Image (cartoon, rainbow, N blue to C red; front, side, top):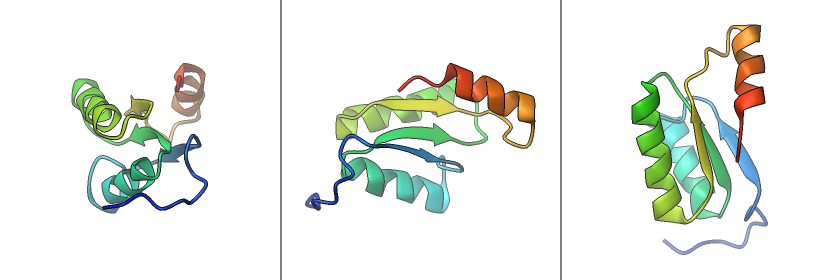
Length: 85
């Protein structure tokens, strides 16, 4: 698939629920456009890191994975503090 010129190249997208289904499909579309991707989902940290590495390799972008519980304010704070992309 060819990359559209959308102005998204180099931007950062945080996609919650991006480890499966619509969230994962959205992550692929944005990565294809050159967005750096913050993947988030309910999977083991090592599995998520593997997924992030696959995205980085396939699309030549920066990635980050978190499985933080976004229902918990303290987890959100820790997630934002640890975010590096």
